[in-house]
Length: 170
Length: 102
Image (cartoon, rainbow over all chains, first blue to last red; front, side, top):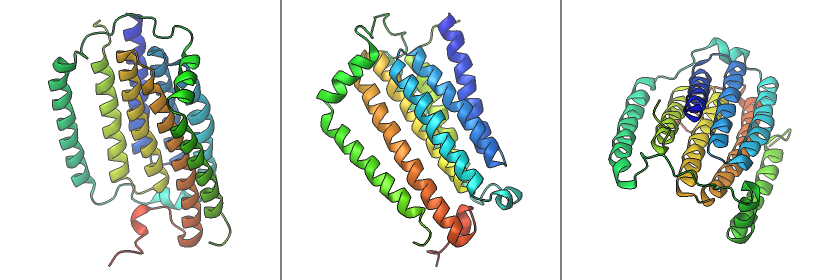
């Protein structure tokens, strides 16, 4: 019961924030709405007993990526862009395509709900016996060690790439 | 009130994915296009966590961590490109960058 209430509250945060993100004229307003949406997503992680990802979402997305976005918005002069047309000319075609994809997803979720029994509430098992973070660390550093190292390499490439991109003359 | 099932999370994630796609396809401002990409990646993460919870398997959360890593790298490089673009072309509107147009 309380779970359902929290789910709907967070769902309103997520979807409302997302809709405001893509419709606001000012990029700063969009960024603030995106923060609301990301905090809602973090709440959904907590509802599903993914405590480590909840912390990562708050620290990394809200604390890291969004500060980066706001920093760039302040750095780049967006006043000119805010005064112009906000949506491009293909918006009607885009909406039709998205509606088609949405109908497709709804159809397959409806079909698959009976096959996978995802429509039943999950059994109340203590999934985090021994701690959520400990479980993640165990699997990440044993089973997924190579992908973990490749991800660190990706981050190194991203650091070098963004520094090169921000140089005075490229 | 009906109990919350995995289907609810799937529906929410599908809605978030579609909103993000609309943002990518229709907005002109590159900053907001990048934000819409973050929305899409978050929809993927909700899906992964929902199935991780449903199957009592922590692997979905590991994949979500990798998706977040990719999102960080993409945001950093994307915003770097945006700054370089603004310095050279004085615009942040996606359809005014038409160097490759015939």
